[in-house]
Image (cartoon, rainbow, N blue to C red):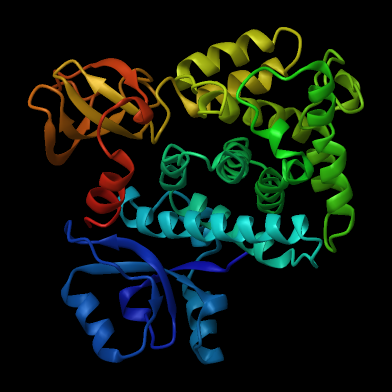
Length: 403
């Protein structure tokens, strides 16, 4: 894991690698990620109201006495664990967007190597899973926005990445140790790796599979485990998570038909996360369902197949209107959910950006629906795939790159 520390602007030195702004005076948006190369750059940051920054000491090139000075001046509670959530959504979105695209390319390269029988380099995927966790530390909502920007015909790639993000985010919510969080994010990215061995006519069949075809499809778990056995550095825990992602508490799952006492907490977690993302995604044979409908199905399945306590925690974490999802307000404005209000789950913070009444984009505006002075309410959830605007293009150009 990266060694993230909060560094006051007066302690910032040439050679330090800045991850993000930690605190600033004013609302000016500044892109700061990268290594500080000159004293003049530090002076400019001071003039723009920067108070403190998040610095990755492992990626910094500074003298040992400078590093010791920062370590001495930085309380342990101010390290990465305390930094969690301190970066604004706008500041993290650019990094999260680039990271998601990097991960997609690496995932595609990995699957190509497996399919072609080439040597598999596991390290880049492991590195990107740790970057996922670092982004979730800084602001979990940024990566959660990415999972709602699905592309047509990219299900296998995006589903695995989304499950990795959701596993890491859920593990953080459950306050698991950082090394476990990173490993679970990686397990999510690799959980469906065996599907590359499934024939395309079955994997992409537009209709219901026959019993024989379903048996072939179920074989992706075993095939995935065979691939993982050939990789160096795969832990026992990660291997078991992949092995158990289709097992169910009542014994109805596969490939082993394990029951309640045989499935560990991580296997129970991925069964929930995998099911949620699969239900909300468009597939070749059906449309994805709204998140709230998928959560209802998870709750129903928790009576027999899924861990009820974990399902309830997942629902509480994801929320009725998940971060990154779209909603229509009663004013006919289309809005992006940007943050939950813990005490008002039906009234999250949103960013309005399109008017259905006038049928055009409007200047993005942040609205806290839980504010006592706010008269706006959510009328309905909206799927990006069902609206006749290029939401993905707008998101990247007007939200990610607007700061």
